[in-house]
Structure formats: C-alpha cells, structure tokens
Amino acid sequence: HKTLSSTRKQNNMSDMKDFQSVSMPHQANCNDEQIRHAVHFAFSVYAKEGKCNKENIGSILKDLGMQLDNPMLAADAIFGFLDRNHDDQISVIEFEHALEPTIEKYVERGWTLDINDILKDAFARPIRDEKKEVDLVDQAFLWSHSTMVRRHHGIGTFWGFKWLFKMYDDFYWKAQDERGHHLHPSMRLAHLREHLKLVAQGDQEWLSHTLEIKLHKSEVPTAKAREGVQECAMVWQAKLEELFDGAAPSSPLPVRRGARPQVLEKPEALKEGTAEAKKLEKSMAAVKLADVKG
Image 1: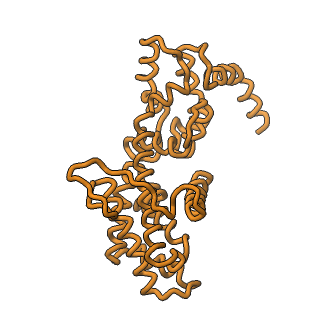
Image 2 (image 1 turned 180 degrees about the vertical axis):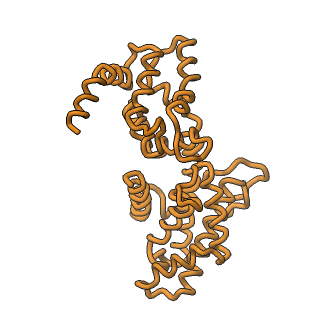
Image 3 (image 1 turned 135 degrees about the horizontal axis):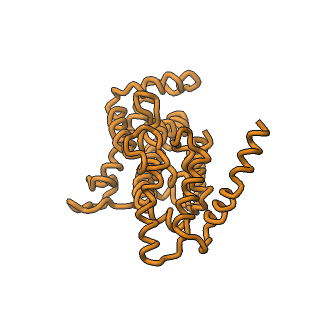
C-alpha cells in the first residue's frame, strides 16, 4: 500500500504543483488550459469510474479554492444543478462542460483567470436559487415553531424539539425517495408541501410511526400529541403557501393578488439574539452539520 501511494505521489508531483498554483483563490498568473487541468485533476482525485457523488463535490470545491459563506448549501445546489438525470452522480465531463462557457467568457473579455471567480460565476444561479428556497422554508419552519410556542405556552407540550426537527429532515433536508436515496434538491420543496398536507389531514403513515417511536417515553396522550403535530404541519404549510404562492398571509398584513412572495421578519420570539432563537438555530445548524459529516 505504501509503495503504491509513494508511486502515485511521485507520478503526480508535477500535476500537484500545477494544481496548487492554479487553485489558489487569488492566483492571477494562469491560463485557460491550466484552469481546465486543475478542474480535471481535482475531480479525478475523488472520482470512481469517472463519477462523483454529492459528498465529493464539497471536497472538490474546497480543493479548487472556492470561497463561500455556506459551502454545504453551495455543494448541494451545484450537485443538484449538474445531476440532470437524477442518478445521484455527476461525471467529470458534466462538471467540465458546466464551467467551459464561463472560462471562454473570461478569455474573450480578457478578464483575470481566477478559479475562485470562475466557479462562483458559473454556479451563481443555482446557488442563489437554492439559498432563496432554503431561506423561505426555514423562515416558515421558524414561524410554525413560534406559533406553537405562543398558542401552547411552549413547544415542549409535544415532546420538545426532536419531533420538529425530524419533520424538517424527513420531509425536506434529508427527504428520501422510495429507493431510500436522498431526493434531488429540485424535488424537495414539493415533497415537503405534499407531506405537510398529509400530516395536517392526519392520514400520513409518518405521523403514526413517529408517535409510536416517541410516545413510549412520553406522558403526552397520543391524541393530544397527534393534534399538536397536525396543527404544526398546518401552520407550516400555510406559511409556505404565503411565502411561495402569495396566499393569504398568516399575519394580519394584506398581500396583493399576484404580488411576489413576501419575506417577513422572524416572529419576535425568534429574532436574532434572543435565547430561544439561538437555541433553535443552533439545533438546526447541528442537524445540517451532522448530515454533512454523515
């Protein structure tokens, strides 16, 4: 094993030097062929039979020096953008083809060939679109939590936070298809809305299954717990309709017919800096971090 590793390292030494010189975020002394070579090399490090999965994409972007505020969301968005056939894999050809128009644009216009800028430019739209969707879903999620707290003097009436995050994961962030594979990012919002509707109506298998798992250690009566989860799903669903469809608002504020989705402030209890907001958002971040590590 050591011999093979040493041989590979030795054979790729010149490639690695080229790759490192190009992948530095502010490297300006490179040409378009070096950019293409760096992209191909970074992808090949993680590829199996010429293809990578979503978990690999984050590592590839990091190795290429792409600087982002939210690397996890960016990797998810880019993977969803490139995985057009929904087979949970992307090829090096797909990855390279996605970057080629941007590389050519930079060459034609005489712009500095900085790989960080090229990556951000090439994938700006899918990252922006996914961030917008996730932000609105999270806003509706926080709204449903705050509403339940106000109505019932604490979400703990219905087993605390765990079931709420289980709903978020199962219906949206970690949603799976019938094969047990994670849903394609483009399908998650529809999946969330469909399953919230089913839970709100009380005819969802997930509801009964979750109640059976959680209630064996809980003193909350099954009927009361079921009503609480159904109510929360109904509130979350209504808020999603308001934000995405311009439906009648959950608050008294009017929404004009045909108006663009309105981005409301978080409820007072969940505004930045409050103890409750910190607790909930820290828990949400931990859930998503655990997903990345997994």
